Length: 187
Image (cartoon, rainbow, N blue to C red; front, side, top):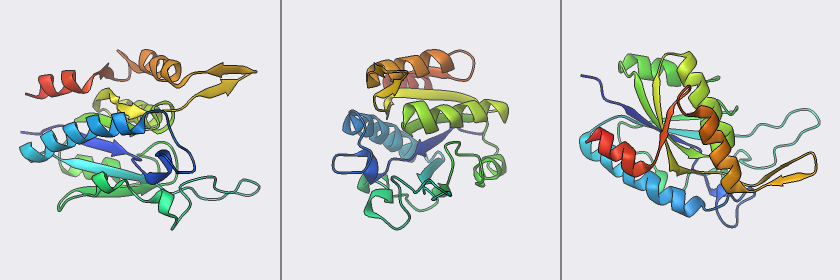
C-alpha cells in the first residue's frame, strides 16, 4: 500500500534571522514541519527534501541561496536521514528540472503533504504542478512561511499573502489545512 510522501521545500538558512531573505515567523513554521517530519519518520513513510540553489542570470545576480553560501544550507533540523531523498532545484516549482516526479512514481506515491517556504512562491508553484502531474495534495499551512509583498504601491502583510495563497489553492489544487488536521487525517 502506498503512503503519502512529505515534501519539505526550501527550509534553508537564508529564510531565518540573519539570512539574506528572512521570512515572517519561519521558526513557528519549522516547529510544525518538525512535527510532521517526526510523524512521517516514525511511520517509515517517504520524506523528500527540496533545496533551492539560486543561479545568476544575465543582468540578475543571485540575491539569496547563493551556491556554496551558508544561507543556501538546509536548516540544521532538516538534514535528511538515510533513505530520504534530497533534490536541488533552480526554479520555484520543485518538479521543474529535478527527478522529483520520477522518484515519486518509482515509489508509487500518489499523495503528497507539502510544507516549507515560501508559501506564495515555491509551495504554491509546486502544489499547482503536483495537481497537473496527478497527485493529491495536502498543504499544512501553519508549516509554511512567507513574507510581506508589495504591488502597485500597496503593501500586503505576510499573513494576508499566506491567506490569499491558501484561498487560491484550497479545493482546486490542494486541501489546505493545519498540521493538526493533517496529522489527524493520517492517523
